[in-house]
Image 1 (cartoon, rainbow, N blue to C red):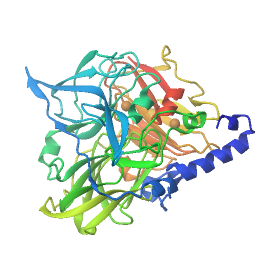
Image 2 (cartoon, rainbow, N blue to C red; image 1 turned 180 degrees about the horizontal axis):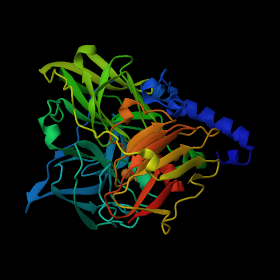
Image 3 (cartoon, rainbow, N blue to C red; image 1 turned 45 degrees about the vertical axis):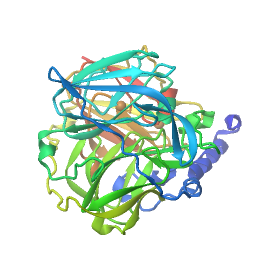
Image 4 (cartoon, rainbow, N blue to C red; image 1 turned 30 degrees about the vertical axis):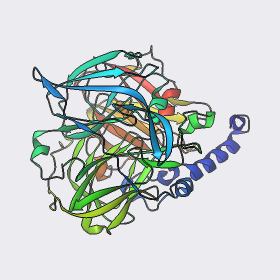
Length: 484
Ligand code: C2O
Ligand code: CU
Ligand code: CU
């Protein structure tokens, strides 16, 4: 693959885009700036040939932990472990997981309550845990200066004063994030608040409310997983021909009559997913940072790496056996049962504040993301752990204008910030689609896109922003700033 580097730019670009349309889901979403206006399915030939597996294994439902209450603090214990796991039935792979061989538990907590998490590292290498989507300062977040070495435990304490949301946690050590996530480390955090606990939404875990972590991985003939990257895989991000939901290729899940809540996480290293029910209607009720104002009727949805969406699927629209499709491929079999579930859809979900400030009075900061055949940069620079790129004032709103400058490489970039939830105010100079008008921490930019967000930091210290294609992040498509 390295040899593409020495051939002229244009030629190497052609090779790259061919490789991409054959192997990845990327292309399906490019040039489509509005997630709701996607016109066609992407066709992922590699998924289809590999996915020829019967839907005979039940969806893995990770344990949902409530922790224990000690002196008024909700305490969770998690640990990284090495394990063995069958992504494909009968084929073992070496993996990493939290509290088990693959993925991790759901940590369930309430808004505003004191929470403590003890993280023990049983791996043979350092790790950190980043609480993706939480509004916490970086000294309790596990990013680059907070390695947990083998056999060490790190405890962090915070209260999440933010609305109902489906968040996740994953490793974030320098130069090892991509590999550790790919090997299986990813868990979830559910926040409940006063509003969400009163809403009549499906909320019986594992019955009508399911975590749906979608990933794609490259598996060897023996079913084993290996994280290696060629230069091209660093430039494009690591993707693979096996599509999986909660660590299983082609699982099924039993659903009740009425609505089923799917909390979908794009947990892949680098692939955009177009999710649909082949033309049937479903509802989006939440985005990265919480519930939307009201349920949105949708036919398809794009999620880039790091993004989440809470969906409601109505059994009435489904056949007895039906499927959730990802990039045109059956990813999860939905099997209807006779069990009774929630049959009414709330009209109002949450109150998302209207954007009332005079945007013309706010300062605008520019971020230009660029991929070349050699580098992945923001504003022409690679991340430098020792460098603070700028300062923002605590509690002061700013507009961040983010541009994906790559017409030629045609790479999407999911831009992600730590320690805040923001609002999208413009996508390519237009009002963003409704499902991007709620709280977000990650936003997809296709080649040529510009997105403007309204952001305010309530935390302290140094924080980072980066592309959530994990190989891009590791190549330096990341920056650091200080909140004063
Ligand atoms: Cu999930 Cu720094 O990211
Ligand atoms: Cu994050
Ligand atoms: Cu990127």
